[in-house]
Image (cartoon, rainbow, N blue to C red; front, side, top):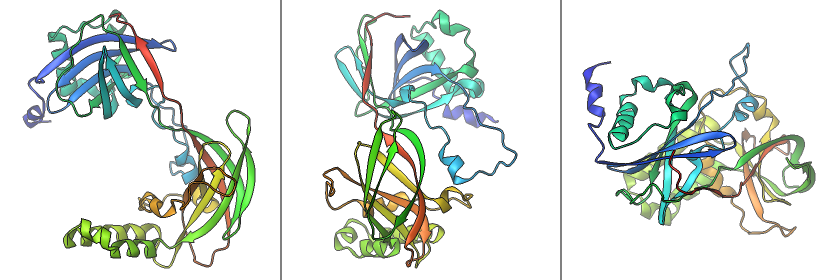
Length: 341
């Protein structure tokens, strides 16, 4: 550590607004500290934190299957907050971050934030005063298209709208896919109900050919300079070399589902293999898998999935799994009528 780190700490934010409101649900308490106005308008919330449990393994190297099962962001975190109503003022969130306070004893910017809030009138609630920092995390949300602090009074109601990320449910159902052939199958979802999946199309996707067509498209060429086009090509082809060398293909699956779930298929080979390196992501090529039609032959929404395993162009049968599906949770709101704690 040296003194240069002090230059990164603001002497104070341009302005701060103390809210000091505690929200309570599911026997847990969350505290809205307040907001700061500087280059961005930010909202700060303290919430419970627990280190995720990581099973002890003799071999630290894990297969793709294990890595894909790692927990994501907790669904109850305020990091999922999409809209914040402060009285009649609507504040839309455009993102944020969260971090444990465990190591913040050396994070002078966080300490300065707390001190500035206290100078502005923030009173730490009794229930929070003696809580260990190891058990807390600070959520910082950035407000979209606004830099000035809103008006606030302690009796103002607060409404917070949550838009959680899609929830994962693991299926791990083994099936064999055949290029050029349809098939239907049934699986049970997390509610115990039968869900039908109708696979309408299994096709091999030559992502190299698709990329080259994209780079030759006049509409695309007009959007970039020759130098930008060269850099994009170079980046794309390097990613392809790592994940799907020329002459190989990815596997595209078009399907209908009797419930509005997003299904994720993987090959057995991929799930049971060990990651070799940071391969290029297949998400760049998802645009090529978007179905041409809105609905399939069963009258349901037609969706697509790309399987991140490179296979030879003469592949016909593919041992695979419906590994998981994503359930889109409903938006929900919580209300605090003006009690300051």
